[in-house]
Image (tube, rainbow, N blue to C red; front, side, top):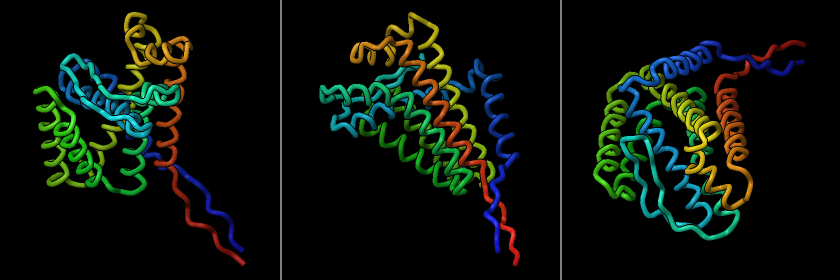
Length: 236
């Protein structure tokens, strides 16, 4: 007879994830992380764009600015579900991006593929939807950097880049949601307020729900990334 394989967790990966979060928090105000913050903003706006496509709308323009603000201008079907999905797409999209980065890096060992995918994503967003020089220049510059990393960096370095991007994207989403929760001036102009205008549910409640959902998505992605099955024991 044989027993079911036990599930164990890769402690080294968990420590790497925790270390990346700690590094992101400690270095949060350093200028070197500014491009990554803009990358997280672009990921947030891409979440809105994907939600727009899923509900049958069309994206007109995606832009980011040096002050870390962003916009996704689109034509939406004026339905309750469509508006809720699109207004929720930014934060949820950021969490999904983080989970996918962790899963593909750790579970499928496809670090290089992810970097090429990021390069392609940036080029597409820049060419198709950027309508200002700053957004177009940022997309082009970051696409080149990702392409160089995919082509020339060692697999270990590529994996470290992907994990840090995953943790930083999640961290940025949490920081952004923190402002929506506790900063009334920011909350009044946020996606949470747009959703409140449609649902008549307080923006504070929507931001809290998004926070819990985003954390749950990232934790689930991390859980799947860390777990692996031990070799099953065999016997008579």
